[in-house]
Image (cartoon, rainbow, N blue to C red; front, top):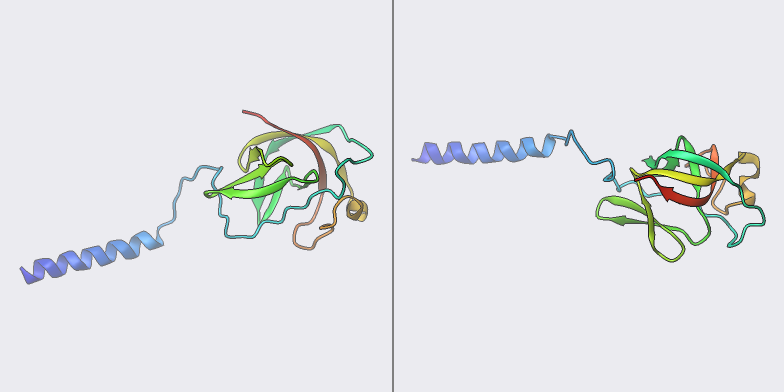
Length: 144
């Protein structure tokens, strides 16, 4: 009886150790590691003088705390914010309404700006943490 109990205890301990070492192999792309602090640059002005109307289409991703689409670091409209809803990273508009989640396919109006003038658009940029190229975001549309 003692050896059976000892075997059971060893089995439980080994199971716990193995479970702690196993990495999930399948993960919903909307749920990402939020342990890295996010860098979320926003535009300086509530009403920019110029509205850019180009379109950028792709998947909203988080790489090393930088939120990007097609390698562009996104500079969000004034008043936008980022939050974590569980493990999902959610982008909120100026009224606090969610407009996108990391992993969504999005269409962003706006335009590309070079690094030498990006400080004219955002107080947080340029940054050695999240480099360009930079996309000044106008509107956000999720592609469901």
